[in-house]
Image 1 (cartoon, rainbow, N blue to C red):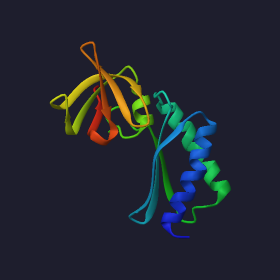
Image 2: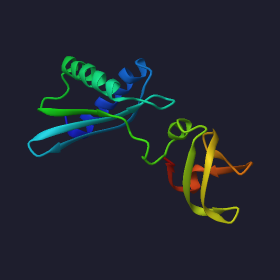
Image 3: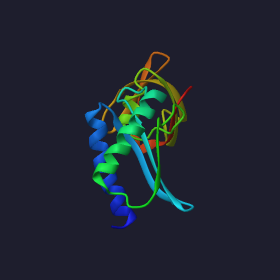
Image 4: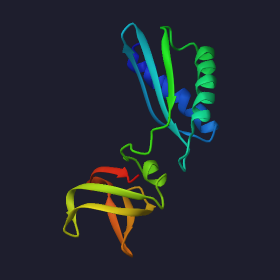
Amino acid sequence: MDRQAITEELKIIIDDYLRQQGLELVGLVYRQEGRDFALRILTDRPQGGINLDDCAYLNKEIGILLDEKNILQDRYILEISSPGLDRRLKTKNDFLRCLNRRVRFLLNEKIEGKMEFDGDVTGVTDLSVYINIEERKIEIPFSKITKAEQVV
């Protein structure tokens, strides 16, 4: 099985396991680094807030799961981590985790004459993010977002 097929199978298995734990898979990378392979998994709670103890627990449990499934034939290093507060926000779920939090947006097209906004996320749909800025509600379509990050 090639690495792309292995990666896809890993995503399915790990996503399923994390969902059973009330978590979501934010990202997964499986690649060769030197003589070994590295499997890096980013996970978070739907509302945000995974901690170091959670990561340690998941590292142990996912390691056991991968041993049982016997997908990885090569030696690998398993890393489980939080995506971090300063990561770029891209998906609907990323923005849902930031409800009632301040986010900075850089746009590829002006909205109300501006290319940049900072505001508190008040809602998210399949197509847009809604923010409050000084008592005003502004809709920002995903298609117009170049970069978005939580303000920490």
